[in-house]
Image 1 (cartoon, rainbow, N blue to C red):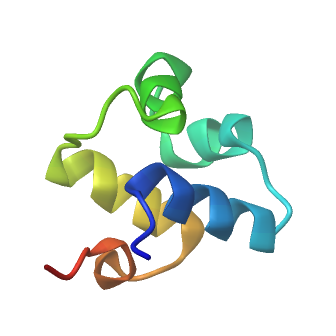
Image 2 (image 1 turned 30 degrees about the vertical axis):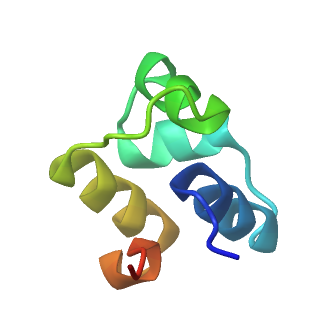
Length: 68
C-alpha cells in the first residue's frame, strides 16, 4: 500500500510528536495552505511547498516520492 502525501507528512509529524500547527510555524507555510493538504483535498503541491515541509521535518524530499 502506498501512503498519500498527507499520510506521509502525518506519519513524520507523529514520529516527532509535532502538529500541523507546529509545521506551519516551522516551515512558514500558512495553515490555509496546509489544512487542505492535511485533509487530502489538495493533492497537487508545489515543489517549494514540499521543500519547506521537508526542511521543517528535517527529511529528504525523496521520502515523499511515490513510486509508480
